[in-house]
Length: 136
Length: 127
Image 1: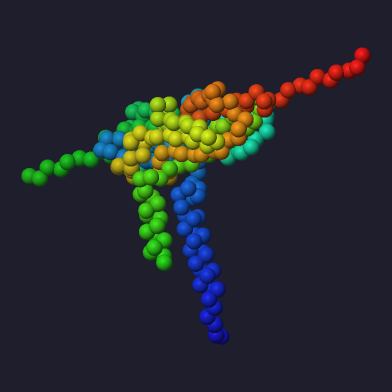
Image 2: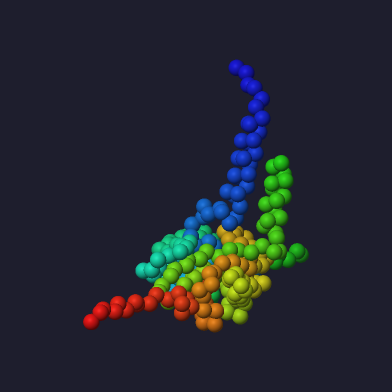
């Protein structure tokens, strides 16, 4: 068994590298389920935001199940029966569970939908809040 | 090489000038062209639409709190300001362009100028 050096191997390798760069770039990387969420945390609460342009509040159903927040809803189609020159937006139903990093207080959840961004504030459960430990 | 690629990606992430090109639908009716674009987080006050010569520019600036990644623990999206450019033909009635923003979706109606609208041609019959 022997191998020969071929300059085209390097070229192919380079091409793979470039391909990988683009496939991993954020604008192209879409291997997460719709809708896309961000999770922020501070001492008392966990804040989840989701991008939901064109989704009405009444077609959204948010549930807290065990340790997960389930977002369910539908982006209703606004497609007209007209000739389209460009069609890039997608519509349809979705359901996504977001696992919460802490226990939350189920009675203290606030959700708001503004300008197509859903914000859910979940207060951490008492036992999940940071406690300062006194040194005697 | 791999390191340079990594650096390039890092710069792309952190770039201040980065914009998001919003996804858009365009359809045509007898009277107008309609553009619909998803721009979550954009408020009416922060939206700029300009038509210069044949170039239609849509800018949406986002508030600092939306693009901030402070205390972010898990992220699937990253927001930047929006910018998208379309080239439009001459047959647009520039005075009557109408924009509405609802739930993060921009609807832009570009009426066709009179000369482009379809008109019914009367057939004269010889009596």
